[in-house]
Length: 337
Image (cartoon, rainbow, N blue to C red; front, top):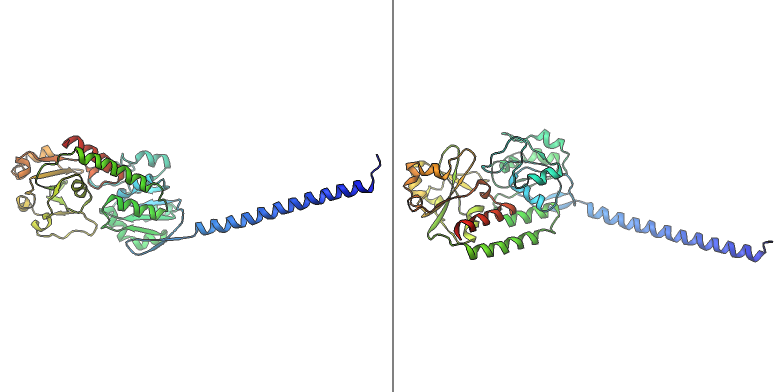
């Protein structure tokens, strides 16, 4: 068939319209990409978060977090953060080299988290080899103090955020970590779960009458008690126990490390300091069990021992995070219902 001029015109116009449409789509795609790129860049920019050493600029979405206090690691898994390495040490909980606490060992295995080598000094070479984009340290205990002492060296590796030592309440610790890693989504749910469980526990627990103290049974056998503001005594107060708020004064207000939530004192003061009618014993690694303490005349004559109002809790209860506070509530309900 012979092609007429009008047929050429129609086909040319159709091709032109198609080309223009493709051009418009391409421009829209470019503009959208530019907009997304700008948004992504803004989102990926550094954020300023609080820290014990002052505000620190951290990545908006950290992907290689190293946590240098085992008491804080569980929060990161609860918040679904990515942990490339974690200090496995928990107060009084024995573990083999490279072994994580049972509370979050499965999470560490799933993520491929490496165990930070333990020692008298922080292993800076190991930490640097993890290529962290964020380091979290501080908080209670010896590992927390180690990261405070090495803060300048750690900050040279990656932005380093330190949990304030006075932040002992697990809810406040959770909020602090959530703000640090920019993952607030789970916080309200976790705290609501706890509040519901706490309400149930308070209704079931019949706490013994009288003041309550909490003793650490440690390897050196030096008498050691938690201060009333420590995490475990605070939990006991929440469920109805009356704390002995004078233990520090009765011990002569002994000096303690800034990161410590306990005091140690001379054995000669045991009858003065631990005269509370109710006592909890926390056997730490190498420490004596409650039954072993019963056989020691120095403890056997204490009011709580003679009245049989002394109780044992596991070392994991001493500085509870979300997971261990829920487990500790179960233990308290089981014992005092």
